[in-house]
Image (cartoon, rainbow, N blue to C red; front, side, top):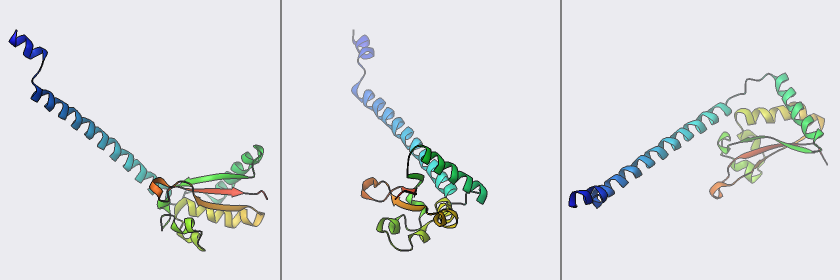
Length: 151
């Protein structure tokens, strides 16, 4: 019975070792997934921090289609872009504080959107707004870009 009992009920030390190995495997998998997600986020930020590569005509066409779709849906404003605050040279501080010259902190595609608005939309009466739209951990997070045309 003693030999049979050892196979039925393993030694507590052995069980602890097996549990520790399982926990280590889980921790290793979590770390691998977190590293992959961080790499993906870094790659996205890198891509967004560079010019889009679109021609002026392509940018105008894209803006026109977004605005027309919003109008068809009865809207007077539309969020056209959302981006991480790391695409601002000050991580969105000037936008959050509504400081004059905040637009100088923009880089990459967010800067392109502002320039498109300045060159083509502003003269036609459109307004633009850049604002922090979430505060993870109480700190400024993503920034939303809204184009509006209503009163």
